Image (cartoon, rainbow, N blue to C red):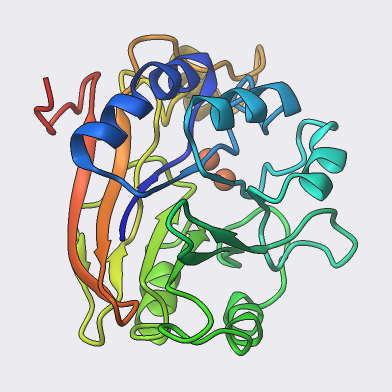
Length: 270
Ligand SMILES: [Fe+2]
Ligand SMILES: [Fe+2]
């Protein structure tokens, strides 16, 4: 099973890059299942129901969210009814939707998609992601009742992502970080067989400050004062993430970083 995971979609340019390219990427690279993080897809903050439908129609198989999961009010109802949307597992207990979804591929194989939020340097205190993931994984067995398990670790601190990756090595197929919007170059298979990358990067305009038009972030850093809301940068987006081949034992056989279009285009598909 070949899985493509793409990091945080930021704004319209990120959404358009997905809509215009995702089927081409799927066909050329023979991808079986595409997961994207879309927590910043609508105006940089959250994901509207319309935009979620647009991404799913374009060919995305599953959407993960993050700390911005419910910035768009309509996601409250949408996450409840759409099984292809995954919000953080360790969000508030009363949060709508699910933090883990078991989905079936066209060939009948099953993949579990899970997301956890980190605790370090995050705006709100979320509950322990280690414990949340431990208890969720008790229900599943790789190569038993599930063929692949993907975990999106949505966190700020590299160290916390590393710790989660190492702790769950060998129990899931792949772990990819999101939230910092900058791809890391540590893509590898961990010793017990889990594919890992600390951050998948973003699907957005890299001529920016983590996807946002750069003038307001620079002003805030320099003066501590805000003049206007952050708005997504609108130059051509790069699709950024990783591709993992999962073997019949549910562990990773191969992992490669992926970036296509825009400034970071490295994949050379054209
Ligand atoms: Fe994000
Ligand atoms: Fe985030």
